[in-house]
Image 1 (cartoon, helix red, strand yellow):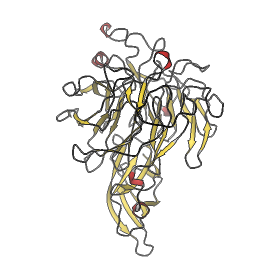
Image 2 (tube, helix red, strand yellow; image 1 turned 90 degrees about the vertical axis):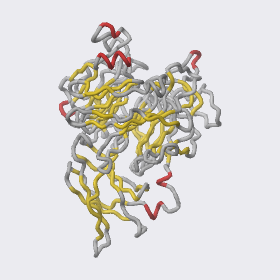
Image 3 (cartoon, helix red, strand yellow; image 1 turned 180 degrees about the vertical axis):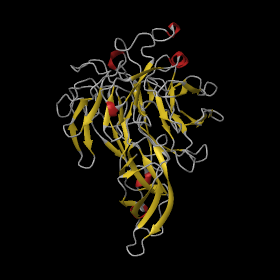
Image 4 (cartoon, helix red, strand yellow; image 1 turned 120 degrees about the horizontal axis):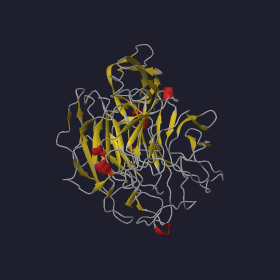
Amino acid sequence: MERPSFRHPDGLPFNAAYIDLVTRTNVNVECAESLENAGHSFTTNGDVLVLAGHKPQSKYPEGRRGLRILNMTSAVLQDAGSQLQYGHWLATATQLPNGMITVMGDSPSPVGPDELGPTNLGAVVRNAFYEVWDPSNATKPTLVIQMSPAFMKHTKSVLYPFVFVLPTGDMFVWSNTYGEIIAPLTGRTVAVLPNWSALAPRMMTQYPFSGSAVMLPLTPENNYMPEVIIFGGQWSFGGINTSAVNLSMRLRVNATADGGVSTGDGWQMEEMPSPRVSHSSVLLPNGKVILIGGAKAGLLGDAAAGGVAMLNDPNFWPVLYSPSAPEGVRYETLARSQIARLLHSTAGLTTNGTIFVAGSDRSARFWSTANYSECPTSFTEYRVEIFSPPFVLGADYATVHPTILDAPAELRFGATASINFSILDARANVTSAVLVAPSSDTHTFNMHQRLVGLAILSTTTDGESGVRSITVRGPPNANIAPPGMYMLFLLNGDVYGPAKWIKVL
């Protein structure tokens, strides 16, 4: 999705589309509202949701209060039957364990209130509320919940905050240099997260200083202990030519059902191979993370004075982060792209374990220290790339990756299920099975990204057919894996084969 543009390759002014990666076909999607800077999520049945958006532009009417469901049959983003009560722009959408969706994001006037809560917050606070919507009762008015005065005091605005559902069902919410654990249906502050003022006091991570963030896998082996990593961003003093942040911050969050929260020694800082802002972070089935796209300098935004780009020196080199490797050797630089992926770019995991890479805006009038392939439109980038991580390459990939032969369509919490598979190399075996939620990535944050490990109870081989199978146990509960569609991957060490879709309920 994007702003409407007259530079569409087909000459049509649609502001959304979907792509079939098997047939390599593009289908334009109709929507009556302005979609730029929306949030995205999924229903428990796997329907695509597009929530909030942008002010009226290019003949598209107000979109900041929109609630929409994608109808794949008619290729239309349909009105869900109700609206958000306040406007949200640069909004993060988060699926809760009960299937409801939170929409959290600021909004310019007039759709968002100029000032809410204590008067000392100041008029800079446009929208101190987040809203909770129930797609299963789509016409019911949303629940409106005010952010804490402390959150608004420290963050001033909330633009694409990093939000993760913890194993307690509470939300980890981070914006720039401040964060809280919040009870989603009441707004109650469960805990205030530590800051990194002693490590990198001027490191900012939300729009327009956008870094990216992931929650590492929740697995039986780590007792479903969440760890959050924030990669890159920009300094508070940054401008369009300022080098971006070259650091990552990692925090373990041990939250218990009785409200106790421990964060150990606080944020742990590491140095990345290069500065990065406005990039994507993709969680691979083996728990490693790919950082891809973005820039080495600048800020997110439409354009600077004279129409020049606000992001500069594109970072063409993807980086692999291995969380379990020793500190100091966790980052590895991979093969470069030739296409700049700047503002409004996106990346997400596909069912064959590759990464879909698309988009970029203001794709000209930037400076670069490396050679690159120029954008054909000189504005919006319509070329699409597939990036193959090293785990789906290699001379022996064909013989050592697991192939799923048969898997159930559904997996219930705590229930057992059998999965039949094959591996050409008889000496190889399945060492882990994981569920990966479908991607929903924009403005550096993949809102729906989540990886949950399954306990393998047994591995067997049928004596007559030779078919191999594993028996797995479903996730413990909806806090660990919110109900919905997931990609099921089987792994042999770090190598994984193509996924099958499975519904968790």
